[in-house]
Structure formats: structure tokens, C-alpha cells
Image (cartoon, rainbow, N blue to C red):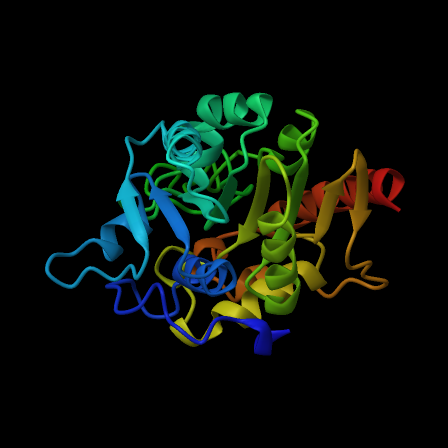
Amino acid sequence: MLDRLDKEEYFYGHKGCGGCGGSLAVRLALKVLGKDTFVVLPAGCMSAVGFVYPQLCFGVNALISPFASTAAMLSGIRAAAKSLNIKNCNVVGFAGDGGTADIGLQALSGAIDRGDKIIYICYDNEAYMNTGVQQSSLTPYGARTTTTPPGEHIHGSRNSKKNMFEIVAAHHIKYAATASIGNIPDYIKKVEKAKNTNGTSYIHIAAPCPTGWGIDSSETVAIAREAVECGLWYLAEYEDGKYKLNKNVKEFTSIRTYLKKQGRFKHLTDEDIQEIERQRDENIKFIKERYI
């Protein structure tokens, strides 16, 4: 799988934190898509670390969009490419969880409805990391952020993650998938599928942030893999109107062990962890009934 990647680097020399999951998601996707690619990024970590003059790190055409307009600008680029008779190019957006599930959702919905041939990749690090680790609608239950600090009565975020994969699939999109930095061959395969899809594609990739999650920079891939193994993340696809689970975990590892490795969950009580386990079991039941 890895030998199919472009040998060139199209996202190189960025100023991201060590172990940044989002930067790995961008780098790998561009090595699949290649040099004939146009990139759009809203305000967020990847635009902040990728456009630091004079050390601009994109080796393809890339621009920063208004926060809410990633998908709209992708649609505009695709229309411009068509009018200029530019063929065989890829148009891809990379946005964080806040720029996707909160601020950019309307533009994404419209692009899917139009069926524009674009790829939208959400690198989900589960908070607004670029502006100081504030809660987003994809921040998980119990997580400490600067806007959900744990206290005597409220132990971090009261959120349950918005299910963006299901929301996008409900639009009858051509292709959608979940992915993880913890399973890179699976992610590469899904970017290749998106590249070859004649219509709108969406990939939602789990991309841990060592700074916001309170883990060592060397643990990004391992903690992302563990999220799948303990049932708090899953790998799936929606294609031709059908759902498919890509990895059916037969026996889950300990949620407690996964959570306690991260600084953002150190404060959780036994009752909090039991609630997270209950939510996991409910979600897994839904997934296995729908996808298998």
C-alpha cells in the first residue's frame, strides 16, 4: 500500500507541534493525490502552521478560505477548473472538527447536495486546538478543554460527539468514510477511493493532538489505534447507498486504560468512565445492527 504513494513531499516543513495527527493526515492524503491538486484550508491548525512566510510548506496550489467556506471554495475551484478545461485534477479541503461540524457544516451540506467532484477531509482532534483547546461539537464526553474545565460538580465536557459520518451519509453522498491515523493503509485506500469517485467524497479521520490531549508526541499513532481497539472510534464506509464496517473488533480493550493515558481525562471518576462505557456500548450496538 505505502509503495503506491508519490515519492514527492507536498506538505513539508510545517510548523506544527511534534506528533501532530492533523499534519500526518494532510501529508499522506497529498502523497496519494499528487501534484495535480488544489487545496483549500480554513482557519485552523493546518493553515496556521502551513503558511508561515517565507517557509510555505505546500508543494501544490493551496489557499486559506474564510472559516465557514471551505466546501464552497472547493466548489468554486472545481467550477473554475471545468471552465478552463483543466482535467484530471484533484480538489481537496482539509478542515478540523470545529471548521467542519460547527462552522463549516452549511457549506459542506450544500456541496454534497450539488454533487460537486470534490474531496473533503476532516481531521478530527476533538477540540478547537489552534485557538487554545476550546470545546467543539466533536469534543467527547468528559474531556477537559479550556471552556469545559473539570470542577467539583461538572467533570469536563457534557458533549456526546456529533456523528458527522451519519450526517454526511444522510445526504446520500457518493462516498464517505471514517479513518484513523492509527490505521494508515486503511486511510490511504480511502483517499484513493475518494480520488476516483465521480462526485462529492468525505473522509473523517481521527487525528490526535498531543498538546490538547495531554499525550507524548511519540504516542499519536498508538493512541489513535487504541481508540479503535477500545470501541471509541470505528472504521467504516458509505458507498452506493450502503454502509460497511471495515474493522469488526471482536473483543474491546479497556476504555479506562485508554482514557487514563491522556491528560484531558485524568480527572474522570469511576462513574464518568462507566457512562463513557455505556455510551460506547450503545453506539456499537447501533453500528453493528446497521453496518454488518
